[in-house]
Length: 269
Image (cartoon, rainbow, N blue to C red):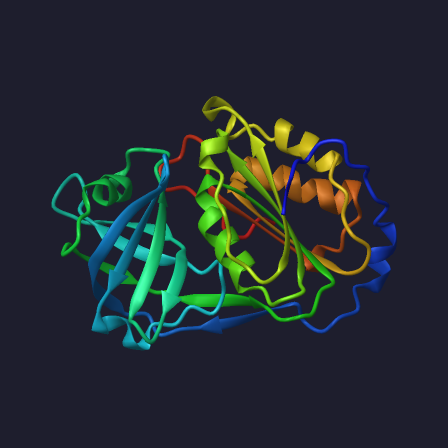
C-alpha cells in the first residue's frame, strides 16, 4: 500500500514507556570471520541510482546472515597497491542456490562504487563477514522503518522478511520519485516516501517535519532508523523525547557521516 507522510495526526505514545518490561529485544550473535571469493552473476539498475549485483560461488556454502541490517566487508581495488574495504548490507541470500545479492547506492564515486559500476558477469570479488548479527527477538505489534538511500537494502530486506500479518510502515528518504522501490512482502506494509534534493540529504529538518505528521499505531512498536549520522540522531531524538518511545524498542545507526570518507556510526549513543 502506498501513501505519503503528510497530514497525519501525532499520537500520544507516553504510555509506552511504562510497558517496557519485556524480554531482551535484541540478541547478538557472533560469526566466524572469513574471506570468501565470489563471482558476479548479474548487475542490474533497479533505479537510476541503485545498482543490484547478484554474486554466486561455493564459498557461500557456510555464509550466515541472521539480521536484515548485517554488514559484510567488500574488498575492492584502491587508489594504490592496497585494497580498500567498504561495508555493505546483504540485500538477500539464497543458501540453496549459493547466491548473495548486494545493492549499491550510487551516491558517490568511491572505490566500491567505481568497482560496482564496472562489474560484469564473471568478475570476482572478495568479501568478509558478517562479523555478527543483532537480531530483534521480541514480538511487536508494529514496526516503523526509516532509511535513506544507503539504508534501503536493509530496510527492504526487513520488510520482505517480516511474516504475514505484521504491520509495518516504512519511510524511505530519496531524491525523487524514480528512486522509490517496490517490496515484495507478506506483511501489511504502508510504504511512505520523502523526496528531498541531493543537496539536503544530510539535513534532518525535512525528515523531522515528516515525522511530526506521522501517526503510529497503538501498542508495542519497534523503530529502526538508518541514514546520515546527523539525520539518524535527530530522528532518534524525536522519538525518544517528543514521542517518549522506549529506548529499548528503537535502533538507530548512522550509515554515513557528511564530509567523512567511509565514516559511519553504526550504534548511535
